[in-house]
Length: 365
Image 1 (cartoon, rainbow, N blue to C red):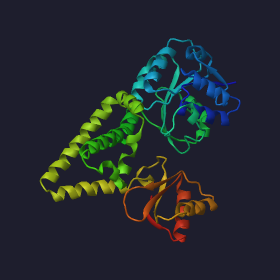
Image 2 (spheres, rainbow, N blue to C red):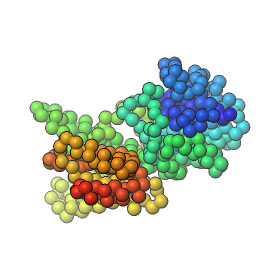
Image 3 (tube, rainbow, N blue to C red):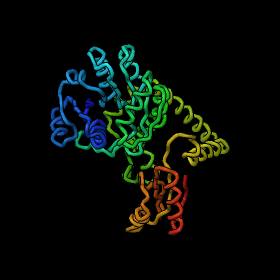
Image 4 (tube, helix red, strand yellow):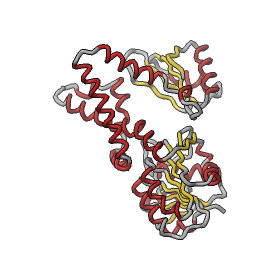
């Protein structure tokens, strides 16, 4: 019987446990966490089969070890595992949000011949902790794999174990991973938070202030509501990458500032045209074989039942929606509804149905 040890029963760890348990009832899942309340909840709600407070006692008995804490804790766990006698064919993986730091910490284990595969599921929730765990958290999310020195058989083993997550696997190097998440996730979080803070100061003496914030401002700064402690930890483990990206962004802002000050309309038009062209072409056709999502954007009137009518139409056709989002990009009467599908075939059928029902499609990709 396979024993899977999950160290860290927060949102990600408990959700992985539920996904594994649903697909592999023959697997014994052991949960480990520094919080006794998390262990009690996980056992009472059958998220795991067994619980243990001392990670070092459970690790030598495990066939698979999943490190599901913050990156700083993952690195400490890897140092501890390097001192323990583990099973000969043990597979160790993590879910940390940066990978160069983690892979460096895993090197001593790899030198010993222990299999380690870096991992990072790009999924989350506004809720946190073991009580927020759910088996479908990762469905259609990207899951980065950083195999390093791991053999192909171990990669297949991990994918099979996590098959019920229904993720989109992406294999990258540690450097590629940190650069990608730095530019597409870490940098935007810094920019969003900085814009909110700067706006608060700029409008401090206005009686309306941020109460007028809507449309583009709210869409652009939504991610500024993320957990401050978590983002502090993330940025300190990917600091070199994010600093370089921030410096490049500051240079771009300086160029725009110069153009505005000089009244250089030609440069400003080129600036906005380049951004619009790139943004309008985000989608699968620009990404080659990369697994992607397929979007449809609809104009919808602000009337009761409008969104329900759209989802009912898709439901009756048995078309699965990956995500649905109202875009706060303008203040007119009509809004824009973004529908996201997991594959091109479903997307194309949905477009045909919506057009036949006289919905105005703004854009599809």
